[in-house]
Image (tube, rainbow, N blue to C red; front, side, top):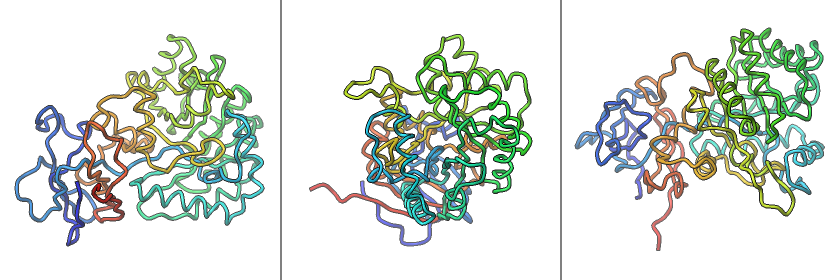
Length: 422
């Protein structure tokens, strides 16, 4: 399928195929799939969404092409990105990647960081991303250069959030924990507190200080937690116990959570039940975790290295998929395209009916922002931001779906289409 550009300003789309999860339960079906929709725009927002009607001449007819709301990239590392050519680890695994990136910091000038991060944001926007969250390494009590560079980045159509990623040991001292949290809180509304929590640095007192400092400064949390396959990892179990006994008013995202698959089934059920009760979001990162977990030189990995996404969904835990690292020591590949992540998840997580049932994992911002009583994307009054996939079909998507048209707030922003095959 090829689409010609509309000849006049967009007033909406005709004959667009949306996923079943996005539509009302009473939406009409044909051959077991939702019928196409007509979407009208007004002042950059959705003004109506109805089953497709004949002869909507004022709308751009996309001929039944698949479409999603603006995509969400919930977990990246813009400070590390695009460093693989100068910093390649000599051995596999998470700790080797951390060591390699430590050495690469000698190159991290403001200019270097800005250039790499701006390129990443431009790629994400062209792929249809409207929300992107980046983690930024903190190895001192004061904000690093990268923290300020991210705050100065601007990419039209993309909401950028930043998370202070400090090793758990930094929170062992209560005053130090308070100092980091205060700096984050004073940086603005799109800033969150984070921490790297692993069996190699486990400290329950530091965890308590981390939680208390977030509470004191009214901060949301996004934690790198249990990024390992050890049944001795303590992070999620400790967090579940803490939330069962203490008030926490902010929103929490837990990224990675690989060790959840290594515990007992009873432990898994208990942890997921508490996370669901407190609306803690679990962010799975299939590409990087498959690459780093159970990584031994010259040996095929025996374990998948991914968290319990299906069990989390069944328990009522909000879930998302993220890319994590892109072209650095942790992951040498990547393109800031959430469809790459979902394609990986399709096989790693054994997902089926991906477009209609699981595409929300890369385009529903509610689990990331924790909006009170969130409306579904593309509801009347929400932003008219969509990604159209000409040439794709609901059976093979997200594979063979690199071509796309991106609409931000009712305006055509990016278009990447392939020529007809010879």
